[in-house]
Length: 182
Length: 326
Image (tube, rainbow over all chains, first blue to last red; front, side):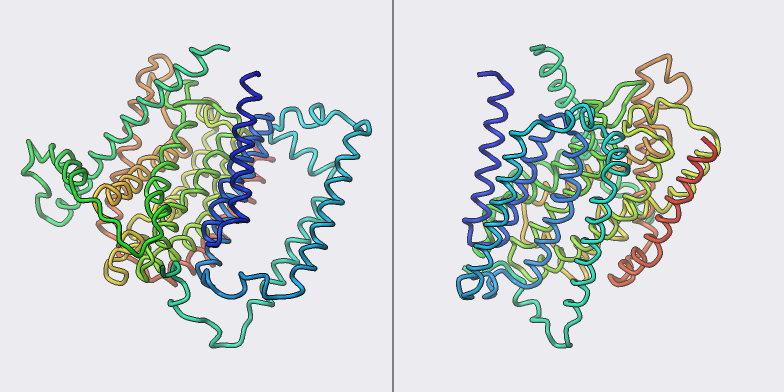
């Protein structure tokens, strides 16, 4: 077994274990931290693939931004509100099933596509994932998906603004913010 | 596999770096207390050793031999891991900072700028998790403040970094210092320095932006429930962060290791870098001694309504300069 394969197996195992931790742990903050470990190990895997820009972007956006926001939200709305117990809602199982099917379809589509010959060698296109080549590709060949993602984010932002405008007196005060009492 | 170059030399460099940084931290606390003392017309610590030079050692011994108290109501694993998470990023950033002509501290990665942004992004976790896991209202308020403050001030800081990146045209910090800059670029950079320094003050939770630990409102903020060595680790994180951010600012705005004869005589590089870091550290302490703390809403308003538009405008003009003058 080569050294790089061993490295991949170790990091992959950490990644998978962290992913299980996200689902299994009952404390939302612990889940968020497992998610952080998951993102960080993914970034390490990107580095082993020579995709340094992707690794940096992974850490900057997910570890540095999104997980902090998740933690922020958990602290603000409290970890033990009923919203986290999904089994109390009957329709949530259906939604989960539907989303799972979509994910399965997407994964199998990309797996099938792997079997077909690739249009161009990704290594030749991205040249080791240097920021310049990634940027050039993104702003020339893939400008439409890029702009679409931008619009999607803008819509999400506006949606959050609309939902955030609650009538006054909606806050629960500091008592709901603490780590759960044991 | 080339063990010598891949493992042995980097490990030696890392160990030397950590020893220098942690010694620097110890004496930075002494420097700060001494300077603050002088600013307030008193002597500062002068009992332990000549000029109080043994004071950091005495503090370390005290912190080490204190009883380790872990309150019953905390979330134990996170409570224990948080101080380490606060300290580690401050040490990690040093990997890409060039210390002499063409020589980085540990590794010259092609994404040096992004490395700084990435590590700065995960810097907040130590404080946020410390505040949450302490299960204490003061700590939690400190943690919330700190997370909001850090995320907010990361934006203008990132914009200024991007502007410097546009002007430099290269992601590597080693190349940034190695390549000569035209005179107008230096002047343009120095115009941004005060604002970048403000962002850095907020990012490192230094006074006057130390709102996560304001003693007059929040007891000690996120570190209220910590004592002994774990509290010392937070101190270490804060002061190591000061040294690290000073090194970043020296590299970005003041030419890093550059100075007279630094290119011919290699060992002069680290000395010039250290001198620049020292001056910037004195600036940190000077600001702490002379500027009072703003209210929390003032802090946020300043960031979102003044600093962020300013930094975006700065980035646009930098891009124009880079296109038309370079």
